[in-house]
Image (spheres, helix red, strand yellow):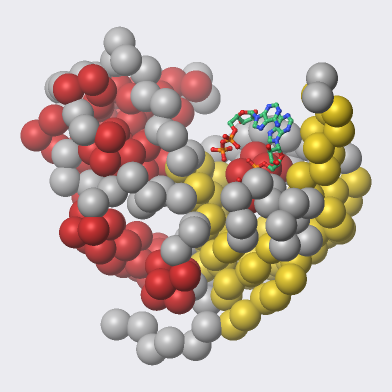
Length: 226
Ligand code: ADP
Ligand code: ADP
């Protein structure tokens, strides 16, 4: 079944510098449990697409549905990993991972064990009590990945999550992401500039045109999985 449906979606930014068409009649589906990557040149609307899929922005035309329901606001079953993790500097690493739980008005103590487990996953458990400024950029990015997983989301949206990581950490994180994906049946929409990452991880690769982003290609990848 279809998990995320993007149908005929267009979005134009209105700014003082004029109108910037970012996406143009974009349509695709992410099936339940599928891993779909989005490739495209800088500025073609990839981040915009994630903001739409997460309910942070509304399309000007077309529709976005999650399990058949229109997406109108951020939801618990959708996790986001941003390109820049924007951690809260006055909170510890552990507290930062728990931010989405507090944002939903829930008692953070309930998520503590889960947060520590996720910090173990991203190899940051020893840094749980540290503050973001004490961590490297790559480590902060890994905190952002743990934070995106805290609600155990059915749909995970990721905006170039590995771009800031060194090659070895990137490989480890890719393997971990693949393991999480295969063992939990999550659907993933994954934005990347890296063709090898897309080929290694995806069921399907979408290629967008230069701005405004239109769907140029949809390629099914059929690699044997470990
Ligand atoms: P990508 O993630 O593919 O680099 P974005 O979705 O960030 O692309 O942006 C798509 C286009 O829309 C870019 O040309 C960008 O400059 C423009 N854009 C993004 N956000 C805004 C905004 N708030 N106001 C005006 N233009 C914007
Ligand atoms: P990213 O690719 O990570 O979204 P960008 O550099 O495209 O980062 O944009 C950073 C922020 O600046 C965006 O979230 C958007 O709100 C704003 N922005 C980007 N392009 C424009 C633009 N042309 N005019 C106004 N705001 C913009």
